[in-house]
Length: 166
Image (cartoon, rainbow, N blue to C red):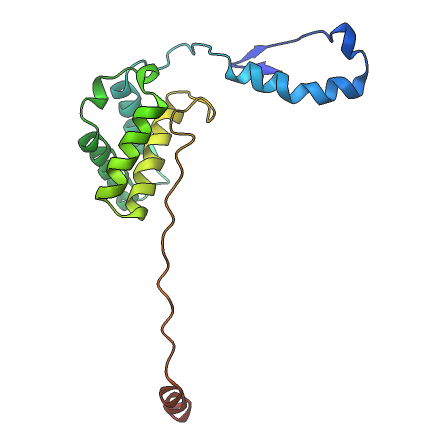
């Protein structure tokens, strides 16, 4: 298996000499190897660096419409506005608890659709910084449900009038 471009091999333990036992233990081994902290060469250390990389990628992506690009930049501005000092933090210093507090504050200020988009942008910044989804402190924060408006159906006499017109 490869982790961060490095091939990792491991012999079977004596107690797992059977192929079926090795197959059962393989997912745990893979999970352990992916979770182990390895510093990726050139990975950003501060949030500001990761944000700058994300914005640069966003600006250079020719498949993204200008309206989408501007909206994602608005999400970044909203993120920085609602978490003061975020740019100066190291990525490793951003913990799950502080992310939960931020999510609670933001969800009270904006609607569920905007919250979900800001959360997605925040996750994308961590992804661009080289974090796996399991290592991302935002991994456990759930998106908010967006309530749907109930459909307005015509009354029976309005429906009959519609049928007469057609």
